[in-house]
Image (cartoon, rainbow, N blue to C red; front, top):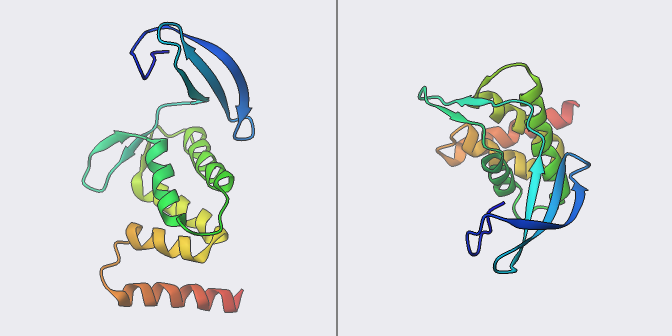
Length: 154
């Protein structure tokens, strides 16, 4: 593993432990050249998944991009970081085990919305505002009222 500080090619693993309910391994490493310590994470990747964008472009699935978008939706909300990590890991696992090598970006967005619906209504509305491209305050009002109506019925 290349050292992020000096670029040296070799580092020594000092400690390894499972994280994310065993879905990843956290390793503490030390550079053999400069002695700097850093952390790496290893995750199981079952298959390469390409994301098909609305404009026809294809790009590799990026777990960190998904994580950032969910974290932005959940910012300043009482949602534990571990729950967000599990949500993202669960979506990634579903994508990798679906058998499809390509997935529509809209399908990923729908999966996130479904998961956030059970987490927190504010995070759900925040994510929906970007995913559904809200342009006016009325869009927020209509979406929020649909959530309120659904809660009354259920």
